[in-house]
Image (tube, rainbow, N blue to C red):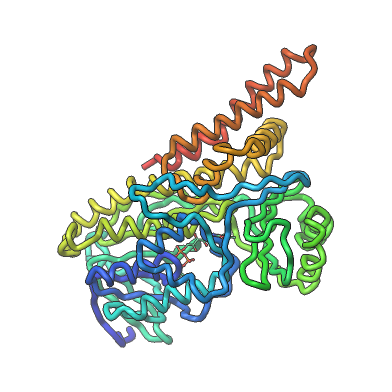
Amino acid sequence: MGHPTRDVDADVVIVGAGVFGAAIATALARQGRSVFLLERSLKEPDRIVGELMQPGGVRALEKLGLRHCLDDIDAIPVHGYHIIFNDRPVTIPYPKDDFQATTKQAQTTTGLSFHHGRFVQKLRAAATKEPNVSVVETEVDGLIKTEGSSQVLGVKGLTAGKRDYFFAPLTIVADGYRSKFRAENSSRKPVAKSKFWALELHDVLLPAPCFGHVLIGPFSPVLLYQIGTHDTRALVNVPDGLEAAQAANEGVLQYMRDHVLPQLPPAVQPAFLESLDKGRLRCMPNSFLPAVPSRVPGLIVAGDALNMRHPLTGGGMTVALNDVVLLTELLSPSKIPDLHDASLVLRQAKAFHWRRKRHSLIINVLAQALYILFAADDFYLEALQQGCFEYFKKGGSCVDTPAGLLGGLIQRPLVLVYHFFAVAWLSVWALLLSQPIWKLLITLVQCGGVLLKACWVLFPYIAAELAR
Ligand SMILES: Cc1cc2nc3c(=O)[nH]c(=O)nc-3n(C[C@H](O)[C@H](O)[C@H](O)COP(=O)(O)OP(=O)(O)OC[C@H]3O[C@@H](n4cnc5c(N)ncnc54)[C@H](O)[C@@H]3O)c2cc1C
């Protein structure tokens, strides 16, 4: 048995200094808690995730006093989405009106896009500045529990090959999408049915600068957004098992050349081709994981380790940062004077599970539902896809409200249900008008199919969100 190099304690141990972990470390420290922030690599992350932050995420950073972490990282303002559906464009800007305003103060309605690693380094630097936070580069490889009970007392890690033990009455696990420790709290596993393949393009002028671009057509959805003055991210969705992207057809690279490249705006094509030729293609699974309540005393699982949704709408960081705001409030010393009170901590963690639905349900369900619509692969979904596009074309509240939902600015789940079914009815109406009168009977049956499909798209995800 090796000898411990350190055996130390604090109020809170946080596993993972990513978006969630680094932000909550600062927030808890500012409440007077002592914190260990443990991260396996403190080098600037070079990842293809978490590059577009919704205005709802920017607001959460403002509430946490961490808005400055978006400064000096060459971030690009994002005013909404520009959707290109079979070569026809529609722009859906974030609303200027503030749906949540409780004060007369103007609030942010602009998002930002950037290099993920630069933002995370700023969050880590903010945590490091807090006198109560000790940031340690260590690979956490186990939880420490009380003998004969499941209560978590801290974690152990390997620091430069040496064994370390970190003790705290509360351990927050925020170790990301491939979490090693989420299974300690729940047997639920992420489900991924597609991957995003990523390229970085240089010096591209997008059709609508300062908007996130979503391309929809006879190919799986493609996202384009600027992440720096000279850099643009292209994310190409490739469903698992997509025949055109199988190895027999020289795989994803060939799929990009044959099926994606010709569909891109002409101004983007040369840079896309150049990036393809360089061959730095990277991919990430697009996972869905509904959250579960905390069950283990002394342990809270959070961030992507707890909850994931398809990244099509870029909502992950917004959920994570709003979770930080809420959890920090629920764990505040005025509510839990002593974190050793494990049953009180567990009660607050359960409250967190339900109260976070206000901001997480809409983003999670919308991401899953829009992905199914945008990647439509049958007659009914194509009808809904068409209806969705026509809905956005109407403008006014048919654009403002969906954009407010996507941007994390509206936190009323019934508003989502209302607009989703408004899209479904419009799809039915468009279908009715498009068919000759002698086909009426068949068309009516098809309309019923479209409405049923809309229920099939939406309700399972709402149910998954509300399941215990
Ligand atoms: C393809 C893709 C694109 C995305 N794009 C967007 C987007 O544009 N906008 C958006 O808002 N969201 C996006 N997301 C989601 C977003 O990236 C995540 O929701 C967010 O990063 C979650 O933050 P986190 O802190 O939970 O995890 P992470 O940011 O992944 O942080 C986890 C941290 O834990 C550390 N760690 C892991 N294991 C250990 C260990 N054993 N010991 C010590 N440290 C450990 C890791 O090194 C890492 O630093 C995207 C996701 C995908 C898959």
